[in-house]
Image (cartoon, rainbow, N blue to C red):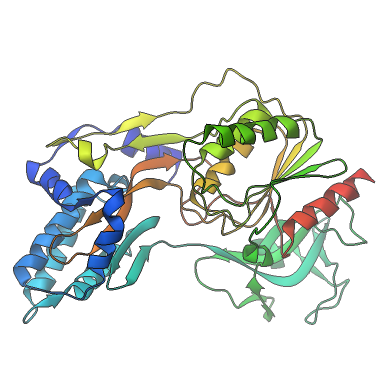
Length: 432
């Protein structure tokens, strides 16, 4: 989603009226959070439905989307949605005998998957989860290049091409990924690159000038944080390990600790904020840290929020808009912030990346984040007859530098299982 789309679809949204039956579908299907586990157990059972029952569930499904799914107006129009519903109902009508809940889920998934790209949206039935996400992953070769004018020199030994060989810019332009190279012969003033591709489909090799070079998934994607101290004071820099934000939402004492961490780090010339492997939780912890570090937790977030299911009006639909608060405090951190991230940096942890764009000197390293922040604040629903469970969000979040499935992009890609160690080596090399 780009800025123009956000403005046209959400900022300029005119209140719409729907039949009251749509709100009745939501009330019938909405599952309170404390009952979701019980609902999933019901969904585990294989059930046979009459055509009438399956039809009623499909109608409820699309009614819920129209009224409570924040991505509905981005992915659909009412006309497009009604045609999809009609296609599925026609398939049900043409079947002989009863239909299983497992088959019904397959019909819903088959029609919606080509349209949706939402990493949070999922269907669950018969112990199987179906996701509507299209995630990108980085695949790279073993080759490291140094840019010399318009020539790219190979600076490391590989089994496929000798060190000192080179490519022209035309030969490798589409595969260049900037990287931090900290080899003994590296120079911080030079530009270094990996050869790779960020892709939804798996990439086994890159073809350059007719020759194939094997690729592998970028190594930093395998990084998780286990048993790490939250703050590690080093000589000239600080490492801050945020391994998870899965802490209580209203623990003011712990939130104050994160704010204090930020204040203490503000005295350092360099801070490495390690978000690799952080799967999210409560983004307030990231916000408090940035508030302490930078005097501001500005993140550039624009939002469009639908009402909670329990507060849904009978007929009218409108969005409550959320805009970045006017920040009267200028960014205060004068050092360099390095944000380490990877494909396992997800959801609320990605909200730990977004404020870095408002730090004067910030460098993002690693690989692209998971990319599941656009459609959030998820609620649970269950179709009455099939017991199919749904989860999707009622709040849309727009960030200028973010795309669903792609995530936030690094300034430097790191093909190493110790990306924090690479940044440390880079800092030390710069200090020489």
